[in-house]
Length: 86
Image: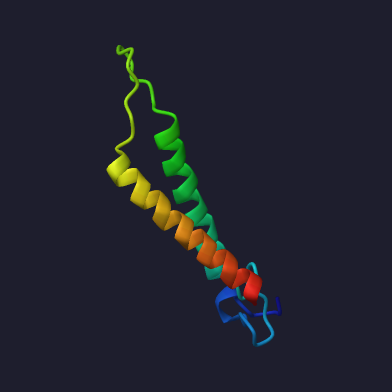
């Protein structure tokens, strides 16, 4: 950083500066969030949580978890295709 230059005045992006994870930051974030949404909902459906004081585990509501898992899968595949095509 040059003298008198702040972080806000530094160039960012394709005009000579550097950007965190390059110009593909948004696809990486969508890949991470979509993957987490998919894995979290599938794990909630596959392994129900145990509640204290009860022997029966409580199942995740499949009518809500399955569409959310599908949305996460679509987002992750779309982001991965975007990253691999560029």
